[in-house]
Length: 105
Length: 161
Image 1 (cartoon, each protein chain N blue to C red):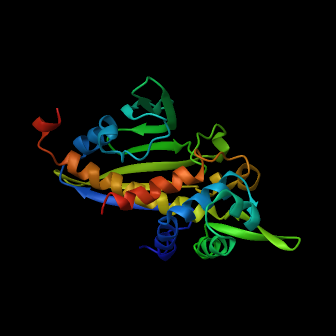
Image 2: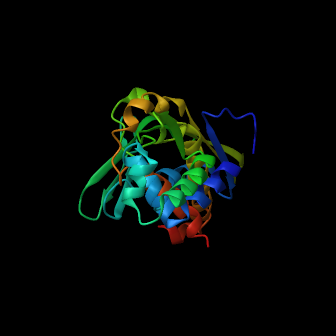
């Protein structure tokens, strides 16, 4: 569960979310990412560090630099999402099913 | 959290103050009324969610513009005890057309008393979605894939304040 909050916090920053979305569209290097955003390369590197530590992206060495990919360990993220989804669904269901029958007609 | 649950499954349960027949009926007939609204693969708001209550039926969302998204298939329908459905949504938040790459969710209803029912959901075989992850990954478009998926995930918390 700690990973979930780290991911949410990581995506809470607008620039970081843009960087994440660019990487989701296709793998990119720091230099490529820097060309797409309005912040400096060192700022991009800092954002990437947070995304990496949150297991949202991973770095793969390519020549002298890294290319960033979406972290393929998506199962954990999907599972976390579904856990929330079903918990929310069942809570709302409980409210619906416990309504007096005449109100739910 | 129950640590014995395999990482490839999600389990949730709730006890409701309702007879088992009503618990089953509300779950299947009114599914769209309590399903979280962020569960939506359509480009427009959902006008209604239809649960075709028979084996071979589907569970689908119909958008306000008439578009449809069939995201689950009914694999077992046993009122008032059990339903089993597929989950045809990929980790890329797209409809999965290969049944071999879909997970399944089972809903079990157990009468605890004449007026109280335990409802358990087990969403399992999540690892099936993982097959082909590497090859699919690079084909995911910007706004239909992970960003949207995670945006909706994040929105769950934002709305709570």
